[in-house]
Image 1: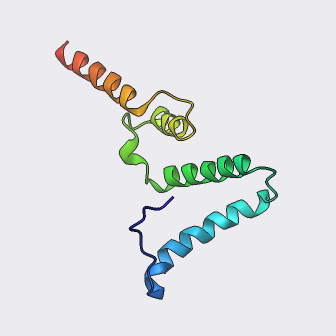
Image 2: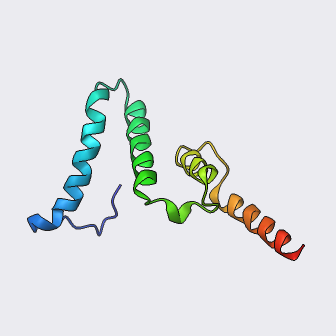
Length: 102
């Protein structure tokens, strides 16, 4: 959900980037129309969004280990099946600190 202070751009050319991105998402969703419940629709669209963010490099700031396992962790966190981000970051920092001291 967008924050309350989000304003829709009224100038047509400024909306082109947003609309182009939205159009590509709609092309992905079109073949899987006919969701039975809101839960399945939400999960499917969220999956599309997460994978597109990974492909476009928008999630690189959240990938602490800069490898494929880091991307898997991002997907796990997006769907609430992996460990918490803060706990994982602390563990990663502790490992780096102990390896640099050794």
